[in-house]
Image (cartoon, rainbow, N blue to C red; front, side):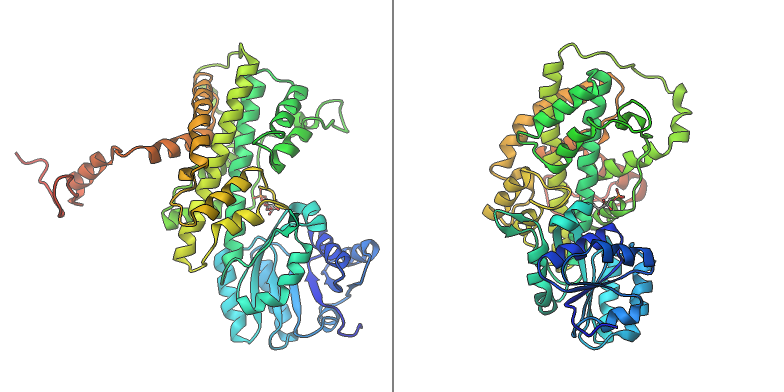
Amino acid sequence: MKDSQYNFGMIGLGTMGRNLVNNMASHGFAVAGFDKDPAKVAALKNEAGGNVYGAQSLHDFVSAIARPRTIMLLVPAGQPVDDVVAELKPLLNEEDLIMDCGNSHFIDTDRRIKELVRNKFHFMGVGISGGEEGARKGPSIMPGGNKKVFDRVGPMLAAIAAKVNNEPCTTYLGQGSAGHYVKMVHNGIEYALMQLIAETYQLLKEYGGFTNGELHNAFDGWNKGPLKSFLVEITAEIFTKKDELTSNYLVDMIQDSAGQKGTGIWTSQSALDLQVPVPSIDAAVTARVISANKEQRLKGGALKGPGITSATDKEALLNNLGQALQFSMLIAYAQGMALLQKASAAYNYGYSLSEVAKIWRGGCIIRAEALELIMEAYNQQPGLANLMFGNKVAPILVETQQGARLIIKTAVENGIAAPAMMAGLAYYDGYRKDWLPSNLIQAQRDYFGAHTYKRTDRDGIFHTEWNKN
Ligand code: 6PG
């Protein structure tokens, strides 16, 4: 048993958890770690430099942490978090803090905060993005909860977070589940960006006839311009990786069925609840589901449509796709930011959208050059109704929509589904129009259900007996 000398505790010593502990230790923090799997505790002991302790039991772990304790959790979302909290509770003292650093659903986080406050403990929801490497070298950290309690851990989070221009990619985001909500939307945007890249890949590969070498060059080239981002960068690298079991490229040996753990779906669900359109994210979630329905897709042969032709001008295709990608990625960020804006008011989070963009510039999966522009847009106009309307954003969209339209036309003509690109353009065109055909929907609703309508020429609520002369 160790004395109560460790500043922090970490439960969940998978690769992410261990890397985070090592990150903390290399910044001078003393950290105790625990995992139910003794092999993971042993792995921590082997890897760790600095002042790190691998505890053999939960009791031993809790006793090793200085009071008031700060215990971080990196366990799978859902029941495992409740199970760990239930086991911890009898061992805690007043003012102890549990920080859930996993991808928990924000509603669970609010429930847990309430439950633990009743016992005079504290609970914070902290989103962490950056994968295994980010955890070790500096992730983007999205904390929310009681501000006074946050102040206990803020300096540690700032120390271990990624830095952009020496500024940490973390900030206090707001009360309650504010941090986990931002992380959920981060993941929703992540889904959309990944789907957009996948659609671009399909067009380049199937219509453009690009080899993996050419695909590498395309994404590598894009990563040197306004599309510069973590996801574009790793995509370029993926096309260079050879399979160890065959002589093929690895990407060609991977089944075309995407998995998902739920955060994208939650983003779409929450957006529907708050009535915020996020069609690019919805399309990305749906595309993963369709991809996973491989058995059904194999039965779709009877559904005839256009076949895929070959691009005559590969250079033009590349240019148009670059525009289409820039356009639709910006639209995906715009939808995510609009959702945060609405959630901020609905759940009293009090977000600063420029701060959110700021802490997403480094460490996280959606980090991108474009976030500088997004941060600036909300800095200049904090109340901006939609990112698309930003002084510097709108002209980029106006320019790049040309490419998006050409690419979507090409996709349609070749029978290639490009759902996230199409959804993004429809979103843009929807917001561009001062007239939409919804007067007809109101007429239909009034016709069959006497739901009433408003008129264009006078105030009031009207109903018509449509089928009477
Ligand atoms: C991150 C990632 C991370 C994880 C997601 C992926 O920000 O580091 O988003 O949280 O990769 O859980 O989720 P899916 O399994 O749903 O794709």
